Length: 447
Ligand code: NAD
Image (cartoon, rainbow, N blue to C red; front, top):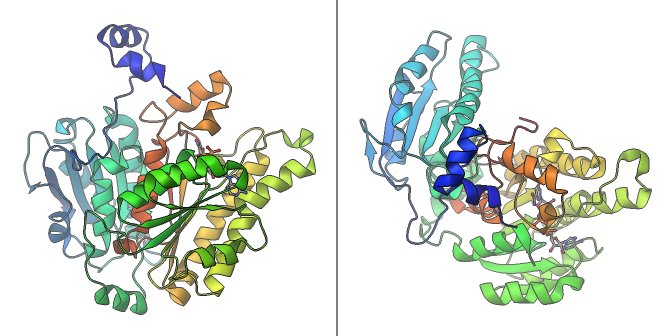
């Protein structure tokens, strides 16, 4: 569905008129393309306090941009604030960023590196938590299509574990992600051994040799996920309901994927998925989802039950069965799909929001255990307003509000969610576990 307002503000008369009326000014976002895989300009590396993680400079040098300590027009700024442990130390954050924030190129990136707030040192915890409020505010004020995030690296660890995360955040792939906090985990000893034994993946096709199954892949976000995973080298199995067989086969043919017409709520769904990936399922993406909106007072039990069954129960059941059967080998990745409705709630969506909040509960609880018991990570994307058939069905006024009520003043595209899924799926993303990443342009809802 075309965003006509974004189009209008891209013309000189439209920009003049909307400025005069004080209306939002969305900047066109630059997404990843083969021709423009990187941001256009250098990465400015700054420090506040004495860093508590090692190898930051080495890790940044592999993020795809020239790293500099001074620039008139940086495309990205990374501030290492891992050493900020007191309220006074926050002054160093201001001192580092205040003089340069205005010079950030349009569509630029600011990433603040922090560490995990300590349960034993309330001064360090206050200072590190302060970085969250700082970054979320910065995301709201920098404008011009730029974004700001906080990445927490466990104290004393190497920044190497953050490499895949920094490559994602410091690239056009994260165009619609802003105001997020990503907390990296320390690898378990088994995971560290697995990683040491795994050869470095080809950066152009990091998912080569992996089989990925995407549910709800006939159209919308699922089709984009299947496409991006295939682009990154995965052999994709695209699953959707038998009723969508034709659309599914068209999508699968386009991507060189295998079509699996199957209702994910079928009792034998996990068996059939495992049978479709006899050499193991490296990546499992739970994307299928439905809405059956009504206010609770008007909602019959079948509308409640069908949403919970598709959006949550089938995800829990197939995940459990596939893990138990050993169908997801070590190094595997499970990515589920939540929604900002599951964080903020939404009128008429008690069923949908309950199901999506349930996904968040699943990810947070299972992530650490799946890593320890199976060497598998479990994460979720929480999309905001994404331009798909699902949101095209939303009434005009609510749709327009959904598009504009975020720091980037526009809706996202399915590919924005797909890029986030592909980052979770990377072999280098072992330290990313139990996370829920909002892909919402820093929506005001639930923020
Ligand atoms: P969509 O309706 O365009 O596509 C969903 C796909 O899931 C369809 O192809 C459908 O046939 C399939 N599906 C539904 N029930 C199924 C079942 N039982 N078994 C197998 N496949 C099934 O929706 P979308 O906008 O692409 O959304 C994809 C996911 O993202 C959903 O989980 C949705 O809740 C979530 N999400 C979307 C938005 C948005 O703005 N579009 C926002 C937040 C979350």
